[in-house]
Amino acid sequence: MITININPVVFSIGALEVRWYGIMVVLAVVAVIALAVLEARRVGLSEEHIYSVALWGIIGGILVSRLLHVIDKWDYYMANPRQIIGFAGLTVYGAVLGALIAVLIYCWAKKLSFWQIGDVAAPGAILGQAIGRIGCFINGCCYGLPTSLPWSVAYTNPATFCPLGESFQPTQIYHMLWNLVGFGILWSLRRKLKPQGSLFLFYLALYAAGDLSIRFVRVGEPFLFGLQQAQLIGIAILVITVPWLVIRMWRYRTKQLALASEKKVSRSRRNRGA
Image (cartoon, rainbow, N blue to C red; front, side, top):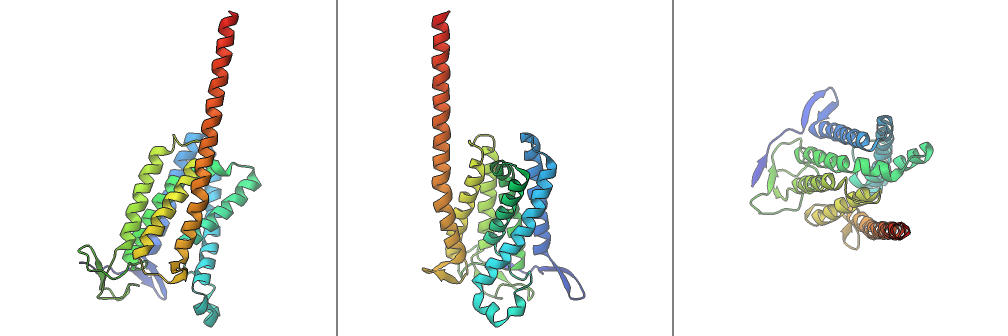
């Protein structure tokens, strides 16, 4: 068992608390933007669009993330309606969904390719999620089920969100490692996956598969069919993205083969004419 005695609160100014979680979220956003800018330069996309998309995505992500959290904790918020407006609870999938909606609106307004923006942002997005999980680990939130495994973790600092003195699955670390592996895969494939948008769809499927699996050993309230809300969202994402990705790649491959065949026939005709 590994004991964690880190104070999640870095410092306080009156009633304002600055937590390691908040610092990691800021670092995650910086990482997403920095890598997106690098990719935008590579594909010839204006950096200004990246900064604008980031702003829209942050606003949309916060709003929808909060909405899904309130729905997930509906009974509590119906009993405490004044707590609905706030930032005490956010969901990862809500942040992703909200950011997607906001970016779609921005791309439509600016007549940009959403698929291109998605491919540019995908590697940084999953790396940012890995960094954010470090904040979860220090914070003591998103912890796993009780276990006696030798790599289990127990929190002892009273400011943590995790129950004290018990040993739990370090699901925050599982999430972080999965996202880091995902980043390595996406980064290596960013020049290879075709057509445009394939990297983005693969990112969604990759993240959903890991999150769905890890939540089987993570504390959470059943939402439907004994599954957590996030697991149902993950299944929906996989059902949509995997066939969509396969079909788009198959069509692209078929089109490329047809074009290559046409060029071969054209060259053959020119050679006979000569």
